[in-house]
Each structure stands twice: as structure tokens, then as C-alpha cells.
Length: 278
Length: 193
Image 1 (cartoon, rainbow over the protein chains, first blue to last red):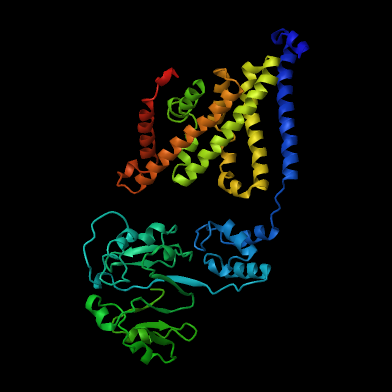
Image 2 (cartoon, rainbow over the protein chains, first blue to last red; image 1 turned 90 degrees about the vertical axis):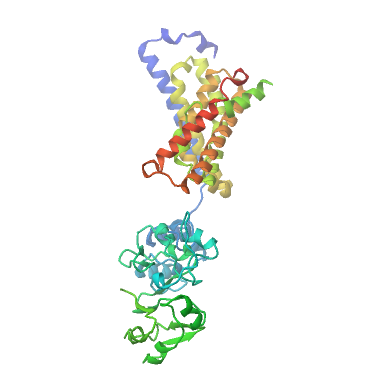
């Protein structure tokens, strides 16, 4: 240090004035390089190769529909066996099968599409006129929403707000929301945000679905909604395959039996059985 | 008492974001939610404290004896801070996965942040000793955390309010930040700091 102090830096030749600082930076950089190399070796965190592989075969939509923070977290949970690949809707069937085979567990699950199980809209009476801020979730806090039906679509836009792909649309003429299946990637984010739980999956092969979720008695349903399922059983009686049953005053279609003839939709007095791709 | 004034000065009077306008990038970028803002603030506090100590040592024992402190400080400090943060990140990842998931994503973001470099350089300009440098670093970070948390809280409220279309997003955020900055301006000159 004494030797260095004795030297006046600016008295040195120009090349030394350039080379000494450069050398110091080089040494500093080298010290950190060695340190980083040593640390990254010593503190190596081994990543399961399968996680990377699984992640590569997921859709990469990062929609959060599976309930995990994103595709990375989901891939990790899959490898750990904490999740099932069927809870991801955005991944294609082939990739799901690949992942299921890779992890040797779980079935790939059936491909589903999402539909809004409400047909009320303007045909359903309103309890009150909501004037205020927010969407369905805020409306729901005020006496369970503005619709007289406890499970009526309020069409205030929670599904359109949360959908990344603009697939959820509100039909202002009909007064309820619709999922545009051309744009939908089946992530299910809308389904988890709908306060009435009206957006539900049906198998991709399904032709018809029951566009009502009301389990109340027919007379009560009729008192506030002209388009709700009254549990009359007309659909069940007219189904040649016996695919429809009325459970708790609501028609339920068994998609393993349904052949998609559409007789039920024809006969339904409320017209609440609708085509999926309409 | 001088230490108390140093702490108050670092948090309020010379607040890094609102008085000195350093570190605006993470201040605006990571302030959408209060919990991520808190994570960012803690990471900045941590790195600032660490960087203050190490840059002080390198400056005192390497650069000053060689007479290089005048022009090599900035680049050497950037190197030190980046190297240091990266090594800490590696260690944390192994030693404490919980801490890593809380701070980890923010650490690489602030390796070359001007607020961290700013605190290192200001420590030298104000000729603080080691303890003062450390305190200044940590409490400047606390000041940053305070500012970013306040802004995140405001932005969470703003998101739910009816804002004219052209002011939505960044414009209204910048306006909010400038009003906050004026509020913090009331501290300036206090205690003669």
C-alpha cells in the first residue's frame, strides 16, 4: 500500500492509466465470476426433468383455470402428484395423453366446453334496479343480485371482465351472457368467477344442454321466469334414449346416452334446452 | 441523535423515490398490488443494505488507496452490486426456498437499479462511515418500501374508481405519484437534513 500511495496516478504513462483501472475491473469481475460459478455449483437446486417436459406440453395459456398460479406451478404440482392433468382445459387432448403417459398416472380426462346455464335474461323478472358500481360479484352482495331468480344470470359482466380471450359475451337483447366457442380456450376462469356458478363444463361432444340451473318447484320458477326449467319432465318423456332425467325439478342430460336428436329442445315448453353450438 | 436524524432523513426527508426521483421504474412497474409492492420493497431494502456495506468496503480498501475512486466508482459499484445480488440469489434459492419465492423474482430486477447504485454513491458523497452507510442503505430501502406501498394502495383504489378513459392506467398513476411527491415535499428542510 505504501508503494502504491507513493505513486501519483496522473504521473503514470497513459497506457498505465488506462490499463490499471481496466485491470482492476477485470480482477473484480473475475472474482465475482469465480464466486458465482462456485456458488451456483455448490448451491445447485436440482430441477426434475419431468417438470420441464410436462411444462412444455401444457398449453402455456397461464390462465389459472386449474387453480394454480400458472402453468409452471401446475407442472410442478402434476409431477408431485398433487394435481390431475384433467383440471387443465386449455391443453389439447394429445398433450394431455402424453403427460398422463409420462407421469404414469391419471387419465387425460374428457374434453369439455363451457356453457352458460341460464336462459332467463329479459324473460326473468328483476327484484330491483341496480344502479351502482361494479359487476356481477358486487351485485351479488346486494340481496343476492338483481334477478328474482336466485340462479339467474345478471349479465353485469364478471365473465367478460375476467376472460382473457374475449370469449364471454353479453347479449343485450336477450339479457344474459354467452360463451363464444370460437374464441373460448376452455380455461374455466369465467366459471370460477361467476358468482352464481352458472358457467359450467359440458362434454365437447354434447349437442344440447339444459340452460337453467334452478332447482325450485315449477310454480315458483314460473312466477318470476318464463324461460326457466319447471321440471315438467316433457323432455324426459320424449327422449327415445332415456338420456334425460329430472333431478330436483331440473332436467339433467346424461351425455353418455344422448344422441343429439334435439327432440327434447323441440318439446321443452320453456325452450330452456338449447343447442351447444348455437 | 445524529443516527436518528439519519434514519428519519433516509425515510422521509430524502425519500429515494419521492424526493430524489430514483428508482421510478420499479416504483411504477411493480405497484399494481400491495403484496407484490411489499415484496419489491423488502427486496430493495435488503439489497440496499447489503450493497451499502460492500461498496463502502471496496471503495475504502480498493479504490481510494489506488486513487481511482473519482472515475471508477460508478462502474465498479454496478459490478459489485450485480455480482453480489446474483450470489445472494443463488444462496437464498438453496437455503430458503420460502424467502426465494417471496423475494426471488424481484432480485434480478433490481441488480442494476439506479436507486441501489444511488444509495451506494450517496454514501460516499456524504462521507458516511460504515455504520452510517449501512443505516442509510437500509432505511432508504424502508423509505422506498413506504412509497411503493402507499402508491400500490392508491392504485388499488384507483382501479375501482371511475376515471376518464384517457387518464386510465399510467397517466393517473403518474399524477398520483406527483401528488404524493408534493406531500413528501413538506418534509424537506426538516431537522436541517
